[in-house]
Length: 599
Image (cartoon, rainbow, N blue to C red; front, side, top):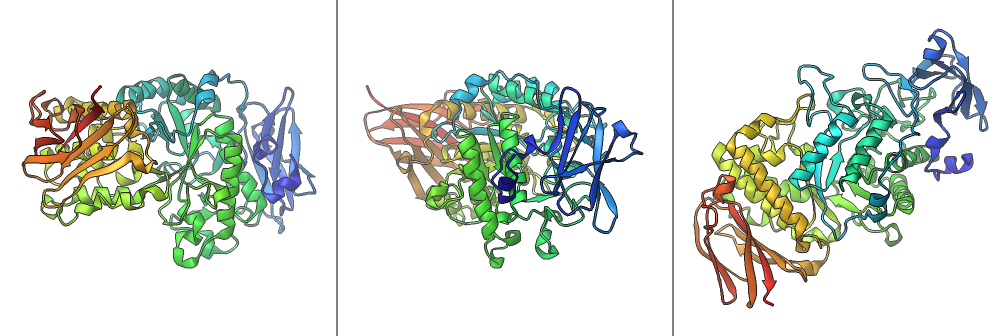
């Protein structure tokens, strides 16, 4: 590794040098601790009572030792002495493995030896700009569990792979997004408070088992995105905090050194921190073959601690541009998505055009407006009518993903289905209409696990999803509805050209008093028309002009008895004549049509 490029923040493969690297006859340990008085190595191979002094290398800022006795699976730490002579035992910032909490040691792990069989997938992979992207967001420890009574009752990466992939394929999703898998000490942080940026969490197994999981997804044509946290890290002193006796990775002052989550903010102006973070990002894409990164809390990099009034963090913004450019140069077809709640411009514009270089941005405004609308009582929906049209006024400013994510089903917010206004039976037709609106609206899609069968209990990271709800007809039929909606989304090209303004039209966004909307998505292969009645009363004789000489096929009626609605199968009440479709719309319902020119 070119150490000067490391200092300048230009290295994307620092993990190939730092960390614990197995060779045929020994393990080589290297760590970066420029302000330490001295560094020693301790571990299973020393009995933990003997220190092995590490030798200063690379102008004295890094330390190295080769240990023949250190083998795969053994635990270790670096004993780092500060300038006063005091020491703290730290896990390895670049370590490829860590022990299960509450243990805090790094573990010697090989990242070699697994043979991927996904060359064909990687060769044809794209960023899906003009293709369907239907994401199923998963917390791996609570999708399914061996036991809810055992706090360690998780499946391994290998054990859960086939179950999850079969389910995702059966439900019509083509991407899995995994919440953070980098090692973390507290289950309740969901992985967002990391102590091991290069270590897949030991909760679910080894690096090779995670590689097997990703490889199996690719063999079934499922892409895999991983959540990546470049903003902050856990406060635990055994990890990155004051690593070499000084604030090496974090800001030197506490007013910007801590954030709203109580964790430490990275100092993105340091070249060695830049090399660390972008190497971690590249590591997940290169070593594990992930298809993309969803980067958390980007607002907190754009503005100091996410507060616009404190001004832009120009060094962090520059780092984002540099990292994203470097990642796209190395992985042109990988997906870089920003979770950003700011209105900062050009998040998804190319760096050469003054942008930050992300491929996508989560549309959090759409998410909040939509859920607020469906939470409101029907009597207020004429007042709130344009909450569902406002998103299209800014939609083409960025390349958006529409998320109904984990953040919306915790902390007293209620689940997506539970948010729907009214009592239990009234929630299901509204939730069916909500998801039809989501599929018809431009933007890639993301749905959190459990929402596909209308789970009503808030997500708990220590319990599996309430799969027994599927024995109840309302929940089982809701999942069947989502499966059919997803099938339509994957099949029809008109729903894929999200960022072409000619692809979208409001056929009706002015029926305020009726609370009816009509969305049209266009393509040469045929158009998709979605008509939604979001009022609580029957809308007789509603008419929408669609043009003449068309073949009209009803693809989906959300009120069909098949999905626990009121309309008998095959009896949906609509008629196409002249230039218009005339229909009678039941409360809280939607119809989706395919429109094709007559041959």
